[in-house]
Image 1: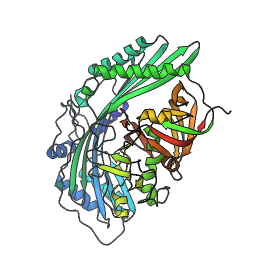
Image 2: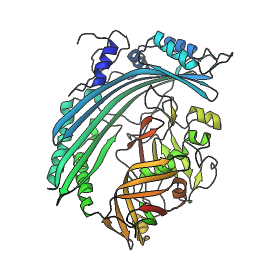
Image 3: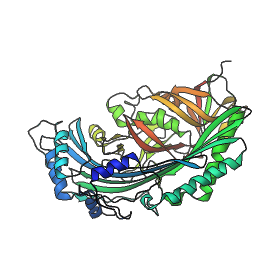
Image 4: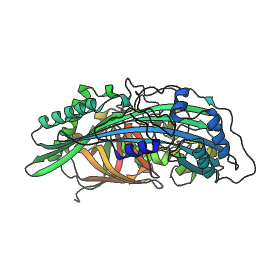
Length: 514
């Protein structure tokens, strides 16, 4: 391949290259982006070479960033290569590759943040971006950055083969296996779609307090959709697989199970009824129903909402917010899960953070800024969508720990209620914690037994109230196998959630008025 300018190459990549997976190692020389085998970026020296920087260049940029009196600064280098394929009715309808490369520079002065980024990683461009970020500060005292020292990190997502080394000729047969299985399971299936995505994300973070870290972050997801028809009536549903994994994750068994569950979720809707509307007991199913925990409760425990006094949990640290058998954690250490991180996007160590322990609110999810405000250490929750965005407190893998009850015991305790399996299209008002969720799959509970499937159901409630009204928690914790993408302040971040079977004593169900 002949040499081309990096800007020209990135422009080509952002438009999408049909049916191509591009194994790219960028040398940040602005004159060229060379094709090369993947998997060659493994140590600090490799990351320096990958981004075309060294400690001296980074130190010069930091000095520029701090020259107006900032308290702290950091540099976030990122190179992300993403591939996407869409298979419709066993035909590839779309395939694309996106390449993103740049550095974000943040300057913090007391409670203010200046942020700038550049897609051109040269000393000149980075210093100009640093000057822009430095404008947040206006002081006489200049703080100097300290000598950078490599901080060793764990590895929670080892993969056998990096995605840049996997060709499209290997990926498409996986999607075809799912499609072929879906159309043979049930004769009512009339249309299928299978979406596939993977990415390689190389990150290098340097901070003015002397820490430098690097991380390779793989990500992948398969999203299967089924449309079925019976007597002129059509239904659709979906299921997913994914995480920070390699191609080896997609075994024949996992692909077959995905196809089966997608079709089963769809055809079950032909038997679905609309429940009565009103206040009732709701049992949240283990696993996928954890999205309610994430949205209605988890966001309210992110430190920035509490620092600004916007969350109902703002004055609840150390206080009882749930029953003694309720414990909630946000965990960045689960091997290969979508929300896991070796380090957060500020270079902080990740961890298992106990938000609620035995009913007591213990702490919030902190980035570096909120941790300084509360005089605690960061919890490893400083996250950003890309180098174009500043870090903010975000969830990782958020789930409830096991409680003392059996699933069957919980179901038997409900005379008339709703069993909620999975949600979609949720809306949450973070401040008061009010939420509305659309129930995608679920069943009625009648006389202590699971009966008919339900559809067209909204549930309406308040996160802190739901937390207080969790009256039974099962011992069958399940963390979903795919995770999702969380939106906050215009930024998207991969996350995962889960919970055991959990009974809530009262939630408003929007169904059919009696």
